[in-house]
Length: 172
Image (cartoon, rainbow, N blue to C red; front, side, top):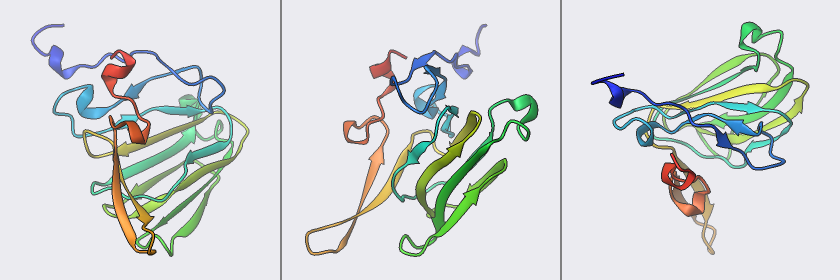
């Protein structure tokens, strides 16, 4: 390596919580916190068992792509054995339920609501990569106040409330 070291990021092995849907270790690219100036957030997730990937509807001010393929990338089609449900739409009160049963890439335009996402059935490991065109992960969610009025908040990587640790917290 040399003068361009600042353009490279070596993936550390990150431990996942015991008993989670993920393998014991994973690699994660957290955009700007991994390579300063990066404009993309691209985690690599391998799901080993069914469960909820994303529990609530949200949107981003940036475009996102959701890739679902079989975990064995030598044959992403033959190794795909899953059923995934996700909701997508322009209005959080009128989203379409989408059922995925084969390798799929979904473009989620800016400000499009999506979620929840749930792996309903999983026969073989699943590779899921949600790519966000922003150097930091965030999600805009809708809540309701005591009077029933909508309130929007933003969950951002690095804030304790959201539950995503900063790279420094995991020793990266």
